[in-house]
Image (cartoon, rainbow, N blue to C red; front, side, top):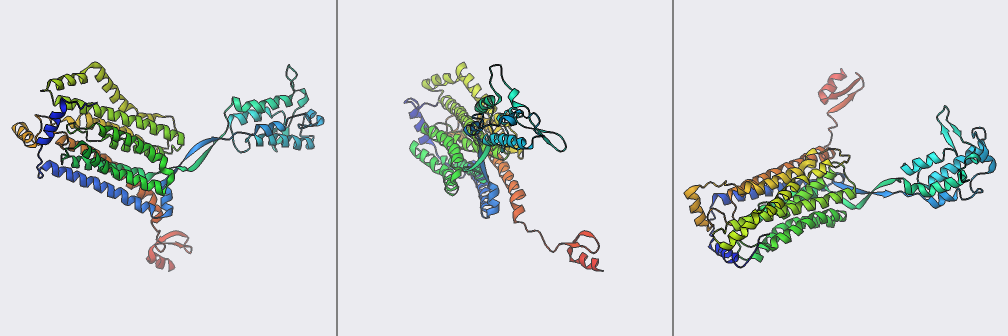
Length: 508
C-alpha cells in the first residue's frame, strides 16, 4: 500500500505545485476525443434502452427473473395416516388377494390407497429419488403390468414379513417416515419478482462507467492540489453510475439485489482506493471502481444470457467476482506504490521503501495475485452447468476483460508511447514539472491513451453485442409484415405471389 509519510509528502506537494498545464497539448486533445467516443457509447446504449422500454412487449424481453429451487416436501403425517393401523390400511381379504385383476373391488381399494400415499408425498406432481423408492416399495400393493391392455397386479401382503415379525403395513409406515431423510426429494424452480436482472441496465452500467473513468482522468489534468477535493470530483464523476442504478431500482425494485452486489463491490474499491490517494501517486487508467462494475456486470450478463438463472448460483458467482475486483485493486496498489518509491530514488527514505517491493515475499504475493486474476474468470465457463451458449462472447467476456485490464496495468501503462524522445522528452518533463523520466501522477501520457483505446475497443464490442441482440429480437416485434406484397393464389394452386402485377397476370 502506498505510504504517505512525512518524508515523501513535502516532495509530493512540491511536485504538484510546480506543475503547469499547456491547454493546447496534442495529447490533451486526444483525451477529449476519447471522451467523446465514450460519450457516444453511452448515448448508443441509452438510446437502445429507451427504445426497448418504450413498449410493453419489448420490455418483457429485457427482464430476467431468477429462480430458487424449493423443496417440495411430502406430507409424511397424512401419508402415514393411510397405514396407521390394520383398520386404516386394507381388509384381510383384500390383503390376501394374490391376483388383483380377478378381484376388481380390491383393485380399486388398493389403487386408491397407493395413489393417496403418492399424492400426500408429492409424487403425483413431481419425480424424485424419494418417489422412485416409494413406488418400488408400493409395488406389492399394486403394480401396473406392461401388457395390452395394461393390467393391475398385486400380491398376498400377509406373507410379507421380516425376520423380526414386522408386517408389510409396518414396513411401509417406516419407509414413508425415513425415505425423505435417505433420498433426495423433488425441487421446483420458483421465479420471483424480487430477484430480477435487467439486461439493458448492465450494458448501460458498462458504458457509463467507461465514460466516468475517462472523465476523472480528464479532470485530473487540472491538477487539483487538495486531496479531499480530488476525491469529491471522482465521486461526482462516478455519481452517474449510481444515479442510473437508482432509477432502475425505483422502476424495478426486484433489481436491488443485482445492483447492490455490483455497486457494493465498486463502492468498497472506490472509498478504500481514494481514501489513501495523495497528489503524487500514479493512477492506473482502469480505476478499481471501473473494473469492479464492468467485471461484475459481465459476469451477470454471461450467466443470464446463457440461461444460468439459479439465484444461488448467481449470488455465488457475483461474490467470486467481488473477490476478483479486490485482486485487481491489490495489483493496482502494488504498481502505484512501487512507481511512487522509484520516482523518489534520490531520497534515502525513498530508496529504503522501494526495497520492500522487490523482496521475494512481496514478488511471490504479486505473482499469485496476477495468477488468480487470470484464473478466477475461468470459473464461470468451466463450471458444470447446462450452458445454452446463446452468447459465447459474453460467457468469455469476464476472462477477456481481466486479461485486458491486467495487460494494461502491468505492461501498456509502463511503456514509452509518447511522441517525444531524448532531449525533447526532457524539455517536456521540465515544462510540465515532471520528475526526471517519470511522468506526473495525474498526467495523461501516451501509454495511458493506448490503455484507453483498449478499454474503448472492448466497450464498443460489448455495445455492438447489445445492438445486435436488440435488432435480432426487439425489432421482430416492431416490424410490420407487408400485407399487400404477398398474396395467396388459390386458382393456380400457387403458394405465394409477390406484388400486384403478378396477381393481375395470374387472373388471366
